[in-house]
Image (cartoon, rainbow, N blue to C red):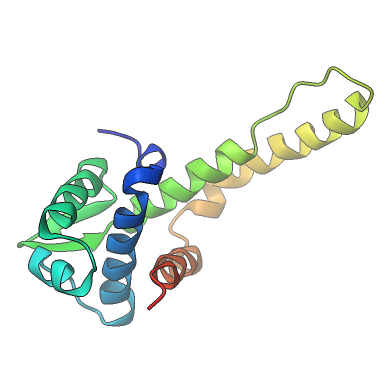
Length: 140
């Protein structure tokens, strides 16, 4: 199963972001789960593009299909964001005139990374913020 963090490539990222935005709108704003046909009707992408990219999203576990309807898996969504934050917090090599300052930053990054599991565990507020970001990214 591919990692959700490596999924949103520039070429297919717009279609996948649009799909996630519509699924988030339906799931979190409207309390619904959409069929693939409904996604196609809501999006400016071809049936083939939607089908292909919904399949890729499902392969990662970010999108789950139940009874021919799709929903965003909230745990996978939090995992995706945690992976991005984790990559941002990677330690940098210290080998220059600012070694002491960089060491202090690296120590803070390490401490923050230790807190990530608690921060991302079943965090409804963070799920809501991420869902809103996907919805807003569709521009509609």
